[in-house]
Image (cartoon, rainbow, N blue to C red):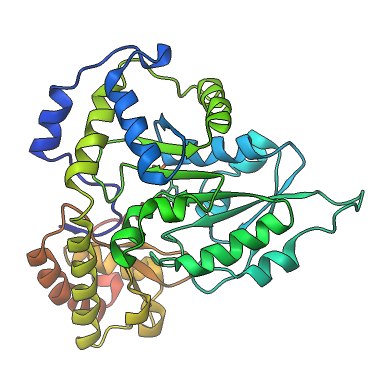
Length: 357
Ligand SMILES: Cc1ncc(COP(=O)(O)O)c(C=O)c1O
C-alpha cells in the first residue's frame, strides 16, 4: 500500500530513534530539561522571536497563541478553510471565547483589502471587536500553497494599522521556506506569534513550537500548563525535534520534487490535476471531473493499493508526499491512480469502505 494520505504518518528514522535514545532529560515542567531548553532556543532563533515554547501538538500551539493574543468576546479573522477554524473543533470559541470571521479565498491566501473590509467598525458597541488576524503558511486546505512574503507583509501591515494582533500558523512553515527560499525568521518577524509543527514534514513522532516575545511567551507557558501541556522528561521527544531541524529541513525539497513528479505524471495520464496548485508536498486530484464522488474514488484507490485522503473541496482528493514516500513509490502511484480511477465500477470492488483520515 502506498500511503499518500498525509505527512503526519511518518515513522521516526533509525537516526532519529538513536537521538531519542541518547537524549539528556530532566523535569520539563520545572524548566530542568536541557534538551527541551535547547530546542526552544533553536526554535526562537529559527522563527525570528525572543523566545519559543515547546508543546505537544500544533493544535495546542495555535490555541495557546489565540488565547495569548485576545480577550473573550474578541473576533478573529482567518481564511474559511484555515486549520484553526475548520479542524480544531471550534477551539477558538471553546478555549478563548472568540468569534470567528472567515474570509473566502481560492487557496487560503487572502489580501490586505479583504482584511480591511472584514474589520469591525471600531467603537460600535454592538459588535465584537476584531482583534486578531491568522495566516496559515503553507496552507493545508488550499493544497499546500506558499504565501509570498510581500503578500504577508501587506496583510500584517494592514492588520497593524487597525491595531490588530497577528498569528502565523506555520505548521508547515519550513515547506514554504524550502519552496520559496524565504528564511523562516523573515516570515516569523511579521507576526506576534508563530507556530511550527515538528510531526509533519519534519518527521518527528510529536511536538510543536510556539514563538513570540518574552512577555507573550511567559503567558503562553502559563496557558500551556493550564491546558495540561506542561510535561516532564519531554527531552525524549524534543531530541527528535533537534535532530529534525539538523537533518530533515533541506530534504523537504525531495518531497516537493516527488509531488511535482506525481502531478506531472498524473496529468500525462489524463488525470485532472492543476499543476499550478503544486507548490510544495500536496497534489490535489479533482475526481469530480472524472464523474466520481470522493468516497467512490477513495474506495477504488484503496482497492488499487494506494491511499489518498479528502481535501477541503467536495470531490477533490489529496495526495501528500513525505519522508516515507520514495521516488519509486511515486512512479508506482502514477501507474496505480489512473488504473484505479478509470477501471471497474466501485460496486465490484472488494473490501469495506476505508476511513480516509
Ligand atoms: C496547518 C495546520 N495547522 C495545525 C495543525 C495541527 O496539527 P496537530 O493535529 O498535529 O495538532 C495541522 C494538522 O494537520 C495543520 O495542517
